[in-house]
Image 1 (cartoon, rainbow, N blue to C red):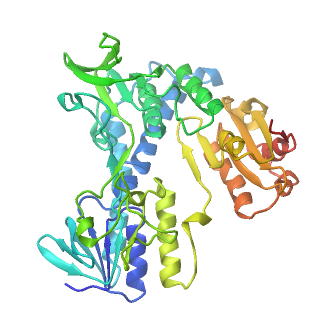
Image 2 (cartoon, one colour):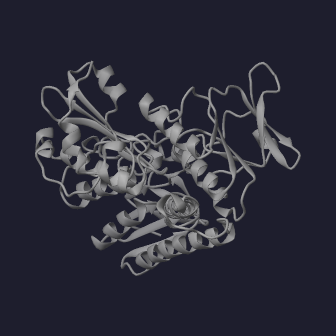
Image 3 (tube, rainbow, N blue to C red):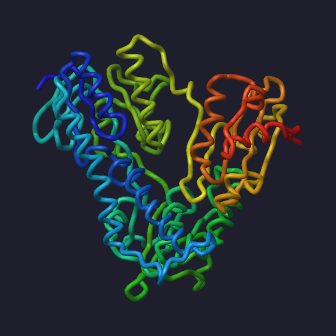
Length: 457
């Protein structure tokens, strides 16, 4: 079958791009071998944040007396009902996506595994599809590495844990970064004992040390246990459960639990696409090599989303779609390098991050200003009884432009956008410092924070 364009993968970038291509008059096919919507809709953002919402309700119910509210009896979590609610939210999203694609003219949805036969020919379900333009949005999956004998035990990953409809007695989580920490707090709030095992000496190593320390303190206050600097990990059965060893000398040091969740990174879904046959280059980790406009080394083939190694978030994947569509269909010139890094860790309270961290700024050697403020200074946080965390901002001492910011605290995942917008506007920090914000909010303290800038020493 001949098409004008083929989109392989229906994650966050693929469907929107396929619809734009079809609406432009191109005969387009979108091929998905598993679930429409990819990780975000099915095993990532939407289901995990739905679970986090349920866990927060359980947590608030337990501390209701702190607010003068009496909740009779013990707080009981029905995990089957929690899962049912999550499934309903996911189903609504996936059905909406399917309906959108099905009603788009010039667009054919094909379910099956696509593999290159040549640069512009792919085989799907035994049928050859051809197109001068091919777009790869194949995403990634949980990595399984670095743990000896892991194949000998049962374990969960971010996908299989979505099928859990019971409460693990003691959940061991290998990986002290974003995915692992969100599940750690979530299951602790549901009622499990939780131990996080991390090989590095601190959590979320890409963050500044003060962020890592405060995140750990927040979770420890809720009863999450940590085993840091854990080397030479190995796994073994322990009765009906599992034991993770963490010593290089063969001692008995380790921890046993009822269930094991691996959260140690991601692997791109590029190993079974026949990329070598098409001549598409990948790096040593398997990520597809792309230029600043997301073109591969093969003319007429683009790569978007997690598999191109230029961002592992839903929002970066969607921005990949926007870049390709703008350049290809709208006559614009947009680049990956135009975007400012921004992301969040959705523990409670959340961490919002944009731009450079303090360690990055120090390493750059530039003259800079810094301000830091505890969330105890924020009226909204005190009113809500949620004063954990802090805000921090870094400014270029010469241009007065914001270099980066951290908001670890109540509504930090929303507040961070105010700073991001200032950075995109390329406006000096004084614009925000002099702005009038609504009281009482978290954002109203941003001008106050900026008013305390001091030289970074």
